[in-house]
Length: 67
Image (cartoon, rainbow, N blue to C red; front, side):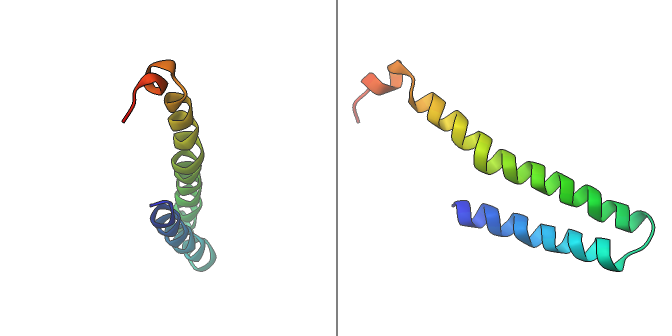
């Protein structure tokens, strides 16, 4: 699952980079804005979600429960 998330973000970052390199004016700015948004989303998806899942699974009420 993480590879699909990373792959989609990398593809979008590639498109943002191409917009930044080959475009002019407002489209170039859109490439920068897109890259910032995608990097923020990638960090949220991979780091913060994992941190929150680990914290949630560490709760005593969930530890007592047996599958």
